[in-house]
Length: 192
Image (cartoon, rainbow, N blue to C red; front, side, top):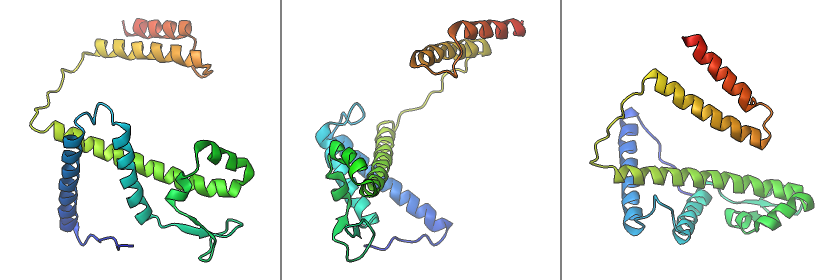
């Protein structure tokens, strides 16, 4: 495994951060050139290729561990638990392991969960880089700040909608819609 570079100073940190940003911008440019609809929805074949690349890097950072037949880590173990091994289980087969071999299930789940989080974070970084690239040269305009009455109206509209959804889901922490409406009316009455 390649040794990770170290940061020698804040100046070096600034340099490396700038260099990393330039590298991500190059990747974003490639992605946008090859898949102009990236932000609208990533096609399955593109998503699969990106995930394969992420898996390669994740495995470099997280070397496989060998386990004995009893699922105890050992250099001489007969089962090498790599990312490919863990992802080779279908969702159904993986779910069945929970009852059949809970220790094996737990080990595989740990690898799968860590990789899925890693992959999600990398995709988020890539998506932000593509957005940044697409917005280059565009001036940002801030919308006018709403007056306080408009703010309250929007907030209470959201509260009513969330209350309705929460009650439909059976969320007992949400008030009923009548009680919420009465509380909002009382709030406005208190302000007068």
